[in-house]
Image (cartoon, rainbow, N blue to C red; front, side, top):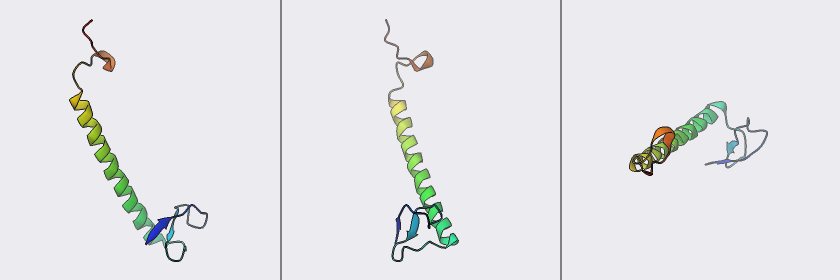
Length: 72
């Protein structure tokens, strides 16, 4: 129902009504931005979990300052 459009008349949000291209009312704009923020935070949380899993799998062999210890 909504799509992003870079423009000046959309309150600098890039979000307008899909059918009319008109600026969204402030209440609807706030709701849309909150939904997108929630999605972005969830995506970031998932990515951070993946990074933590990768770090946990490769935790062996690192020493001072994160340097790899080869035993030489």
